[in-house]
Image (cartoon, rainbow, N blue to C red):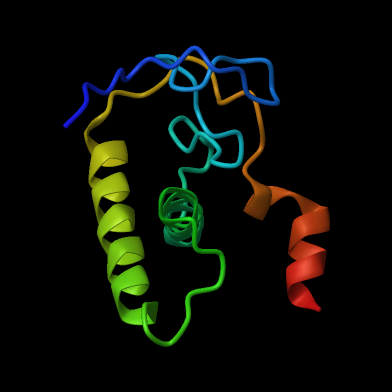
Length: 110
């Protein structure tokens, strides 16, 4: 098996080097430090986005739906535990989570 370098030097669209330490998928928002704290719905949405990203599956087929949903539930539970255990932040996150944006809420309501 070939050695795998966890730090890639191949550029990606954002101009950040793929695999760089500290780089994060831009579609997953920070939930720590929100006021009011992140809701179960926001945690589940972030978990779903993470599972979509790492699996490469946007819309799970019937064949993988159960595994996909189990992964989402496990990631959400782990995320909730992590957020509970972290100390409070001095500053809120730089961006507003999608489920707190009026235009996203309006789109989901239709």
